[in-house]
Image 1 (cartoon, one colour):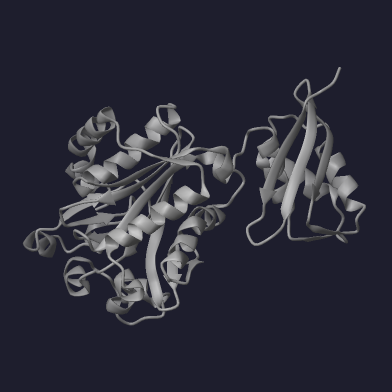
Image 2 (cartoon, one colour; image 1 turned 180 degrees about the vertical axis):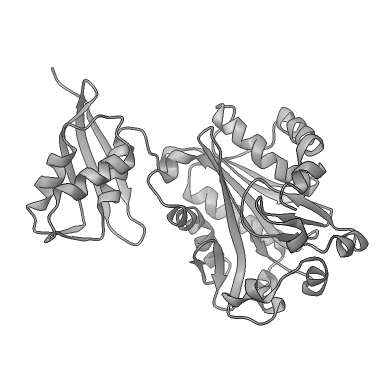
Length: 354
């Protein structure tokens, strides 16, 4: 009986291509063949890698696969441009348990003006839509006409926000579902997007690796508008002139991940400092003494309008990945409004970490 050959590929960020071909019989890997443009010494180690994978179940986790490879290799083996983890990713892609950008068609939703709290709620709503197959992976850009501080899921309200000053300035405070730091958001002062994808796209990656992986497209898009940007662990996007913004993630139990980023366009640093409690400890690892120096507006580096930069981001993403223009579904907007009332604007949610 002829078995179907399964094929998977994984390009290591900054490294080499790993290709996995194999057959499956009664749920067991057979005739595994790993190849690619990587370097491996001694070359006989490739046989050991293949043998380590043969006989494993198709249900093997990424960790099980990579551990089997590592245990099969001696201390004298040198791997250049790839790793046991990279091989495991290629294998799981061949089995359909991990995916790449090219395996998906993305929906891109341009900026739609909604209350910022509703955008925060929509992160949760869109994740459910993707998990249920109502829509595919989605990149959506926020737009809002209110002033808010959106704090991270685990931040203390008391430590992060001067609530009296926020009230005086008409700034609402909202807690989002993702971790990370506070976002000071006035109309038009920053660029925020949410990328909602199956967790299969970051299969086997550490949290840090997944941030770098999911930020890669926007770093390239920033290059298109004249900003030489780079990823700075754990979740910062920086340029030669300093920090531009930061990213945050939430991995839902339904197998979907939300990755969003906020980048400064033209922030009123004085007003931000009146509302946010940004202390020396938070600034200590940024190499600055003033929060003003941490705000590096994209307008000054590009000379472009905020709308032009967002258009450039959408154009880059759409030309790089299979994409279609889309919009929110009426039931998604309705669900977002309900979540705002039932969760995101309640004191119980806002002060869950006081």
